[in-house]
Image (cartoon, rainbow, N blue to C red; front, side, top):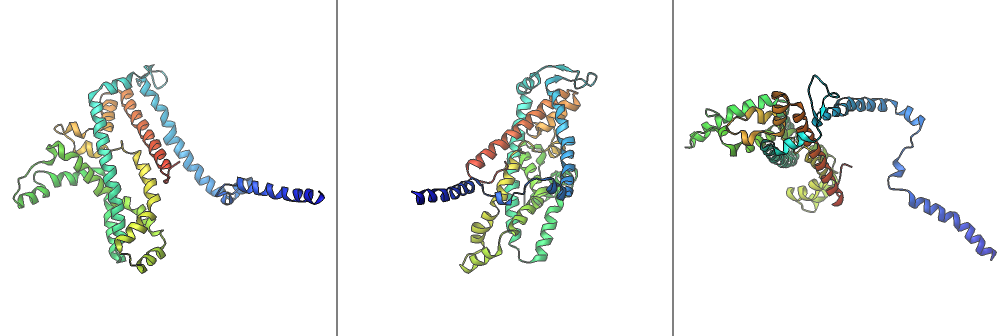
Length: 331
């Protein structure tokens, strides 16, 4: 009996230690305890972080107080806290307005087209650029590709308008091959593809930078092993490159889903006209028209609030779907 009791006493601490080990979560060994000494050690980084936090609070969170206008009959004379409260009357007006519903359709359609085309083009361009073995040629192509990103939309739209006008270079080429000249900006069916082309031409090179960075982080030994096994370029892309940048693709996709309703303002406003107005106007133009031109700040704010709430809902839904599928997610 004594031996048995000794054995039980000796085994008790072992069970306790095992239980403690089981409670530890993966990654706990990399966590640094937050102490005053550690905070002093990281004081510079904490100070830099504090500056960005303060910047975000001032310019991103405090302006949200302005959302109160969406629930008021706002007048500059009475101010934000003195204007008459009207509840959801402005939102009711929005969803009874055929123009606003049409603008939602336009914004959503152009947003989805821009998301799909720019997202795919950036990935394809990054992979193709990575396949170029000549370093000088690779750097030249990459530099030329992201230069349009630094041009303002005024310049880009000016170039696009001149190229697609009746006397533009595109119509010169069409006429050279026996076709007839026509004005692209007088046909509703051409406007969405033109906007998508402008977005891709301006942003593809810039968007591809982060994918190129993700590709460079892939272990070169994987490509060497695949080459030894007889894999060609397509096989390497399919089985090494794409899986290697998959986490980056998922994170950027989730972030871009929330920007579906940010289809743009400058392109549509500059290139649009009364003939193609039904397909060119977006929610942002609607906010400008009512909030500035017609002095109804409350209605313009209500349209902006609706756009922001839809973006938040889209991000949450996309994140939930990614979590359920076991993919990378934002939160």
